[in-house]
Image (cartoon, rainbow, N blue to C red; front, side, top):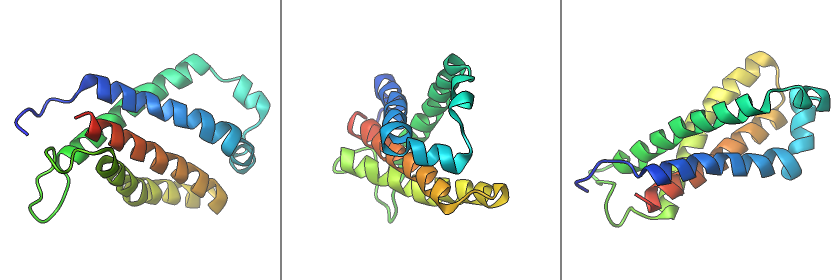
Length: 145
């Protein structure tokens, strides 16, 4: 691949996907369990500045989308050059996202949870969200490279 410029629309779509996944993950799928394990209450949720929370979440997701773009573009081993066929598939990008979830997010959130005395259930919910989200992000930016 000669053009190393990211596809801005792909990055924005990947970032937006984190909010969509979060809506389902922390809503109907694991919302009640997450609230219990994190100590969150309905009052705390309603008392937050949701525009600020969602706005900054989107900005941070853009940072992650750029990171996923770089990972799927230059990642690989054994002399495999990414950013070109046969690596430009959703599946391959999702694979990189899962690796990021397991080898970056899990150690970071797991360590924080140890010091904050959070449960393994809390860690699994949070790491699960980020692993699924990064898999989708990686898939989007890689297939839409």
